[in-house]
Length: 82
Image (cartoon, rainbow, N blue to C red):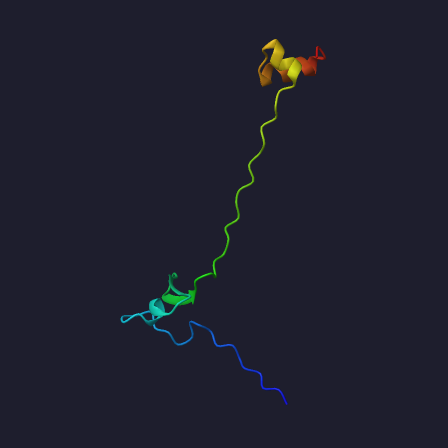
């Protein structure tokens, strides 16, 4: 017969008021929420989603050699001159 040991949370039962037991425990950190302060694991953080930036379209070499900017290049392309 095997005996399974339940993993106890680092933060269970730790106080975040003074005296602060949580801060003294290795791997624990005090987090402040909207309603109250609580204890959480140090590595438990949510990663924020980064905004996806739009890449700038690079001018073709022909337009760069002519000294055109993007607006001029688009207009000439629309007219069929390039």
